[in-house]
Image (cartoon, rainbow, N blue to C red):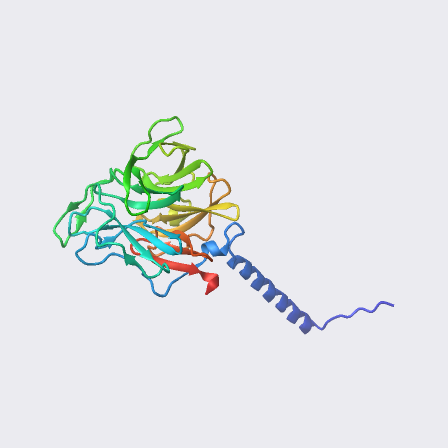
Length: 335
């Protein structure tokens, strides 16, 4: 004979309560996890207690102030930084400086002078090394000439006419200008100005150039000779919005390859009720460098921390933001 047992009503209520609590805890835990396409080591970061780690001198030097994206590279056990500096009380020319560090936290300027001072404007740079040559992609030659007002009023900038350009170097310190980037649309016609914030990713013989047009989205062009770049589409590969955090402006800073996928780190600004927000740092993922999915929990950094890039320290990726000064963030799971 089979015997059945019926739990008392109070016991049933207790078990039901425990089951509901466990279900809610599991749901909350799952919701807190990064989506599968976005590993937590690439999207969850905590700020270093010693931030900021680098910035303008705040003295009467050419690099009184730094701005926009600089670049940090770890090479041969040391960290190298290229940055854009200017002095709002002088001519306002934005020039390239260089600093070094053993730990990526404590930096020394290489020189009291800029390492590149040709033209009036070189900023928003990326440095990649390929075949013994350093390539610097930057905004430059057709940016506005700044007009200095009274010292207490700083600088008034004319309307921008950005065009990215290329410089090369054998040591990362002495640079040669190689001219503006010739970017063509899908019909082979030069694209209209302005366009800027060049970010390059190299895959085999192909160089992928991500760039923005007036911060109105991110386009992609490719080249095998670095002389002419052809758009893969006349539409941006990463478009503005629809979420409010990036519905107004955006520009890509860097692409990395990680576990067979590509991750793009971009800065973005929203606009709500006619008012601009602050710049933020965001992430998108792609299986092929062309089709991109934004991280559902963007932005990963807010409050004006932007121009972010990842640097591998030999163990983990660190996230550096470089505008308006340099901060570093470590993977949150290490804390």
